Amino acid sequence: MAGGTTGIFVVLEGVEGAGKTTQVELLRQRLERAGVAHTVGREPGGTELGEALRTILLEFSQGEILPESELLLILAARAAFVREIVGPALERGHVVVVDRFELSTLAYQGFGRGLDVEELETLNRFATGGLRPDLTLLLDVPVEQGRARQERDGKERDRFEAGGDPFLERVREGYNTLVRRREDVILLDGTLRSEEVHERVAGLIGSRFPERFPETFTTASG
Image (spheres, rainbow, N blue to C red):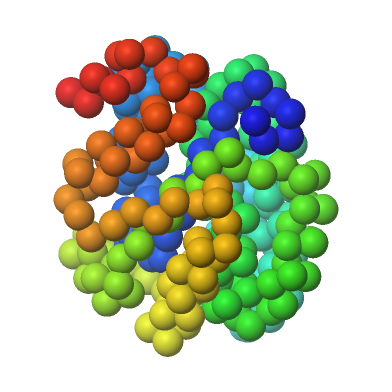
């Protein structure tokens, strides 16, 4: 397991509108029904510092945030999140489910903003103390479909979405490049109905770590 801990660390990733937040909530409900000890979080966020930095990262409008500054704000939030939330939960044996983690940094600040990906990996290891997810599930949707979902749900555009389609296309391309490089990342079709995606997510987690989940986990969909 990641970092030599006893829990399981699962991350949901994807561009804006990919359905990550929905899938995290559906998974939380399923874990609860199955009686599996779990902790759910989001990035950036999860701690007082992380939530304050999240507000800056998503809503700051008083000027430009340079890519380097954006990166360091994200890593500051992540360092607190890992040490205050994720690490302790893994030590308690929880299944930890997180909306975004390191892959977002590589895709958004690396491919999207143009920062060096290898340098980002080094800085991320410093921020996390080397902690890596046991499994990352990447929900892939076309940028225009993700945007349409956001508009349908009445979600206001945040600072990242305001970067426009060219920026988000680079992010999506980055994600799809990264998934080909890493065996711990699995690509899922995020264009399917949320219920279908959820069953695939639960099935992948249950089959990857069968010793950690009761039979009720695979039957707890309703």
